Image (cartoon, rainbow, N blue to C red):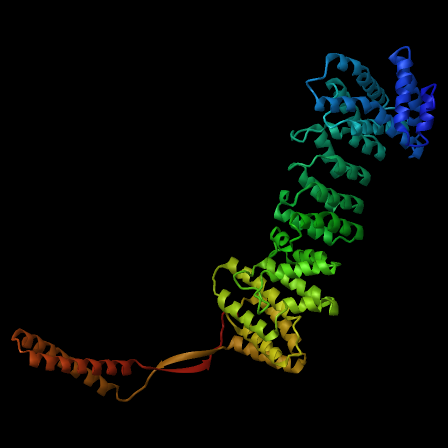
Length: 563
C-alpha cells in the first residue's frame, strides 16, 4: 500500500478519484496517530482544506474533496452510533473515551467552518455552508452534537440565509434541515423556510427549500402553493415532492382536485409530465391501479373536466394488458347479457369511467374493436336502458339526487355518441328517445344542450332538423293536455225529479222493513229488502250519470317563467 507523508499527499489523491477512499481514510488515521498532538494534525488538515474552499466554481475535483472530507470527519461518529444501537449495554467507558478524540475532531472542523462562514470571499462562505450541509447529511440519523455547537450552527446558518448569493442561501438551507423541529409550530427554522419558499427571488432557493422542509399539516398548504409558482422548475419539483412524500389521503378532496387540475393542464410539458409520472401514478398505485377507487377520492360531479383528464391520462399509452385490465374492471359491474351497468350499481364514478373507456377504445380504431364490443351495448338495447333509467331514477324531488342523476345521464348520452348509427332501426329509436326526453317535464333543463348535440348527430339534414326542433319547442310551449268538462244534457231536470222520488221510496221501504221485522213477518221483510236493493242500484246509476264528464285533448299554452 502506498504511504503518505502528509495530509496534502492524501488530498492530492482524493481529488482525482473517489476510488480507494477507505485506503485514504486509513492513511489519514495513521497521520493523526503519528502526530505529536491532535492539534498538529487538525492544523495541517484545515490548512489543506482551505485550498479547496477558495474555489467558487463547481469543479469536479473540489466537489470530490468536499464529499471526501464530509465522509471522513463523520466516519467515526457514524460508526459509534451504529455500535451503540446494536449493543448499547455492552459499551464500556474505555471505548467511549477512546473515540472521544474523533468526536472532538468533528467538532473542531465544524467550529472552523462556522468561524469562516461570514468571510468576505463568497467562495469561502459557499464552501463553509456546503461542507456543514454535507457533514450533517453523512451523519447517522440518530447522531447528536452538543447543544452549544448546535446553537452556533443555527445562528451562523440563519445568518447565511440572508446572503446575497442564492447558491449560498441554498447550501445554508441544506445545513439547517437537521435542526428543524416539525412538532414545534413556531420552530424558527420552519418559519424561515416558509418565508423563503414564498418570498425568495431565486427559484433555486425556493426549490431547495421544498427539498428540505419537513412536511406537516402546517407546512403542507405552503408546499401545495408552490405548484403554482411562476417558475416551471419549482412547480415541477413541488409535484415530485408531493408524489414521493405525501399520501393521497393526507390531502383534502379540494386539494387533490386542484393539484391534478393545475398539473395536468400546465402549459410546460415537463411540469405536466412530473404531475402525471410522480403524482398521479403514485396515487393510482396507492389505489391498487383501480381507477374507480381513485375517482372515488375525487369530487367527480363538481370537477368533471379534471376527472376526465385523469382517466384519459391513465388510459393514454396503456399496453394491451393494461387495457384488458381496465375493461375487466368495468365488466365486473356489468350485466353479462346486455353489456350495461344495473342502475343500482351505476354511480358517478362508474358512469364517467365507462364513458372515457368507450371513447379511448373507439379512438384506437381496429386495435380497440374487441374492447368496444365488450363494453358498448347495441343501440336499441341502450335506448331501452336509458328509458328504464329515466323511469326509475328521475322521480326524486331531492336536489342532490337530481344533480347526481343528471351527471350520470350526461355520461350515458356521451356514450351514445359512439354508437353505430348504420343500424337504421336503432338510429330512429335513439332519435325518438332524444325528442321525447326534450319534451319530458321530468328531464332537467341541464340536459338540453347535450340532447341537442346528440340530435344534431342523429339528424344531419339541417332543414329536417329545424322542423323537428320547432315541433319539439311547440310541444314544450303548448303541450297536449286532457281537459274534463261536465256532460250537458237537457234531461237533467227529469233525472233530478226521478232521483228525488226514488229517495222517498227508499225511505218508505226502510220503515216498512223495520215494521215487518218487528211483526216477525219475514216473507214480507225479504220482499221489501229486495225492492230496496233495486232502488239503491237505480239511485247509484242516476247519480253516476249526473256526475259524468267528457274528456278531450287540446293544446294549452304555458306561460310560467321556466317555460
